[in-house]
Image (cartoon, rainbow, N blue to C red; front, top):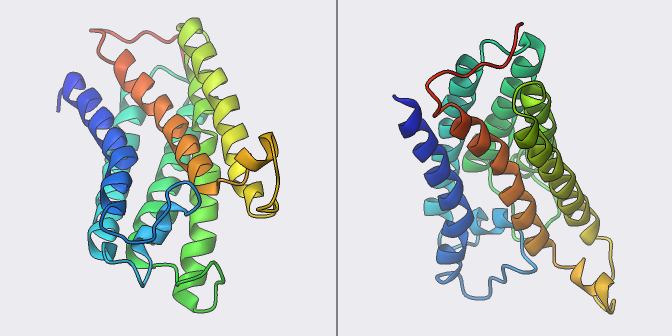
Length: 218
């Protein structure tokens, strides 16, 4: 597949993952995207469970191929940094996406059954790893694409902040006021964090559209 097709593929996959949940939520009575996590769409009580879980499997497989493509496209980058990004991408694809496709959460956040535990701990590992993709991508581009690297560094900071608020939102009282109230919307912060998690791979694939990617020696 040519680089322009890879770039289009990454953009389509990323946008689909950001938009599809809003569409599926229309068929899930009582689902609130501001307060409910994405995994609820694939929960045992969700009417759109099958569609969402199949999508998660497709998303995971897609990012396995995307990770391998980026790894091969940046052969001139220090091996440790591109290997680190590959492992992070594979970790997200397997532990969060594919894992969520096979193992769903229950009707509550309590992890009671083994499948629910596998889903919960797997998602935590996968998403936490993927949060750092922007930082590693910035390191990869720092020498030859300084502006892009700075953009990715900013992306990492915003992503980490959004992900931290998402994780902490569960422990913030629902009766909070002001700016603290905004921090209680865990569904919103999860979506914001994912939006910024996808930026690094989009930028990396966009740079490969150049006829020759020169990023310095190994």
